[in-house]
Image 1: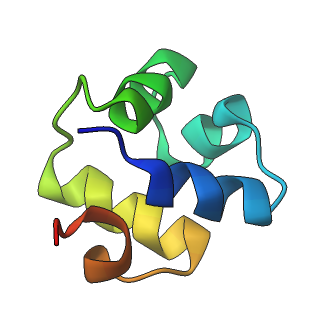
Image 2 (image 1 turned 180 degrees about the vertical axis):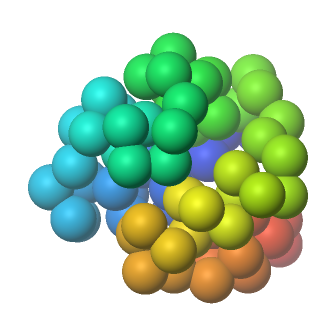
Length: 64
């Protein structure tokens, strides 16, 4: 399942995939794969992304 909420949060902060990747210490491809739903990030990576995007785990990663 695609992670549209993460992509929206990233674009609302005017961050490219590359910029977000640098801030959380992964490759741009990893961010792209998470957004496409083709990569399951570790909890530590989820937390780093949430902190960077000022969102909670529920807001970005919890499936309804």
